[in-house]
Amino acid sequence: MNRILPLLATLLLASMPAGAQPTGDATPCGTGRVVIDRDRDGVADRGERGLAGVRVSDGVEIVTTDRDGGFALAPVPGRTWFVIKPAGHAFPRGADGLPRYWRHVPQAAAMTLRFGGIRNGDAGCPTFLLQPQPRRPDTLDVLVLADPQTKTRAQVDYYARDIVDPIVADGTQAQLGLVLGDVADDDLSLYPELKAVTTRIGIPWLHAPGNHDLDFDAASDAGSLDTFRHHFGPDTLAWEEPQATFVVLDDVVYRPGQRPLYVGGLREDQFTFLERYLPTADSRRLLVIALHIPLFDEPGRETFRATDRARLFGLLARFPRVLVLSGHGHVQRHVFHDANVGWTGASPLHEYNVGAASGAFWSGVADAAGIPDATMADGTPNGHARLRIERDGSYRLTWHPARLAPSADAVPAMALHVPRALRRGAYPAWAVYANVYMGTTTTRVEYRIDGGDWRPMTRVERADPRLLAENVRDDEAPRLRGFDRSPEAQPSTHLWRGALATDLAAGPHRVEVRAFDAWRGEQRASIGYELQEPGP
Image (cartoon, rainbow, N blue to C red; front, side, top):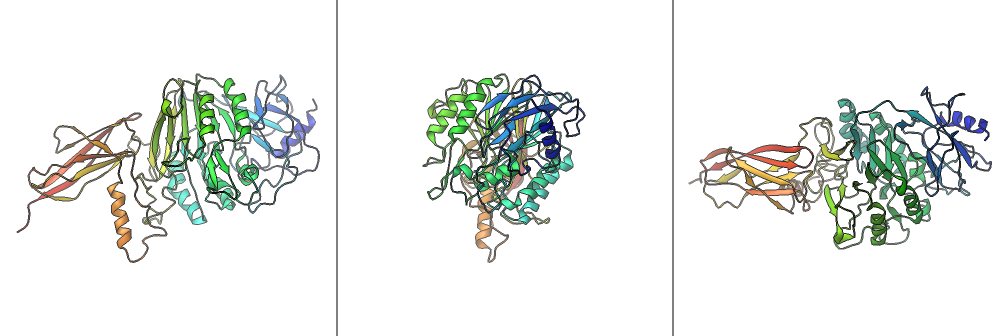
């Protein structure tokens, strides 16, 4: 195999951001190499050897490198070649801060799209570089962001100061980051600025596309992610770490001219990739599926195609540990798929529908720093999630409200609400409410008053009264209190209620709440109310 062309291609690629490729009219090359970049200079130097046994894909076909690191793959126009990262290795980063693991095959006739699409392709023979990783901690720490969803440069600034700056200041030890779609909010020209903000965190980032990442001027679903792919790489990919295998999927099916304009689902080429890749994945690792639209349907309508869900479930069922991460809803939910919805695995399939970094679309009253409150419709504060995976495939999840140090053990697990004053002796119709951000239907939540006995709280599906009060304040204000008012409160899946005692002495009383979090153990919060004697 001629190794001069791959080397020249690598020298050119090394100076370009991931996804940006040189133009050319030559016939696309159907061969390439994967090389160990031992001196970590981002260039395939003379004497650096190829790496055997590495899988390379175009999102449909999967080939494996030979003993010299070489591979052959037919250059299908419009597809994206990428390396499936093997555990124990890393990719060098491009000028844009993203890992360099893909290249675009030139399209036969590139579309003219408002936001540029894939503006160029690479007709050369690529050399992909892998760097050996030093021994890493047994625990893999992953940052998970859903729906940054910035529509303006002002919102990019909110995202930077509200989400990214506290993570950077905390000196995060995370080794990988996932963005679960809706990187932007229809204005894809913001991608370079968003990449610059996110990559300040200094870890490799993988991006799933969302429905607000589409090229809406594309003629069909097939070209609707060209601008996204230009900036972030393949829309379907696999990535391996010692603790887990990550599969990132585009699950937004664009339907121009129809209503609704999109639906959750997968393409036939994605199923082909999954059918070829998943049988080779190590079942001893946790399998993480990262996508945008949840696999479950919203009440009363099909939001993810049932046939696609059943087919995906069939491919995943053999894995003993699977975690699905989704976004899109701008609320926070845990769903456990079981036989009632067609899941046939040995245990229920856990889907964590991650709350949004943008919260309720950067709405609500701004604080002293000018950043909107952004509380979501279920009462969850905006923020990011953290996924910690052990060598045995077990995992822990935490939710980190915005502007708090992400690694702090004391990140608040809940928010409480009580009426500030009650009449002493009144019928006990009023309650303390606990919005336990990571709560599930099986979470045990208890409360006590003034250090008394612990009593169970009742899980209720109703609106968080804290957000209801904010809705009232917005209603009564003669002018907008922010750029957009807070969202209309909707029933929360993680709200608990406990009746407040009114037969105690007049004066202040303290309510303590404890929730037994599945991953962090016992979490506590407290709040006060006052009993008052009735006036004359």
